[in-house]
Length: 101
Image (tube, rainbow, N blue to C red; front, top):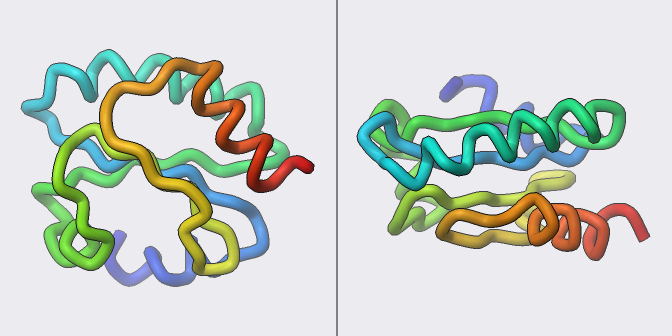
């Protein structure tokens, strides 16, 4: 992931990143919501997961202090970032407000 991260977030297609950890209970609750969103929005946005324990440099660079944390990127810029479990509605609203207007 490390070598492809910059390429991924700098692309034209928006990317929603789920910063998570395998030991995190709330992350496990967030996962099915993100799978559903990824399926619904597959033409508009890419959804990926980044394990904070396996990617400490990326975690530090974006100051991820808790998991789960969601971050929406487009063109290399963070458009939205939120920690804690988010509902599908909350995530959709954040995406719509920033890239689908």
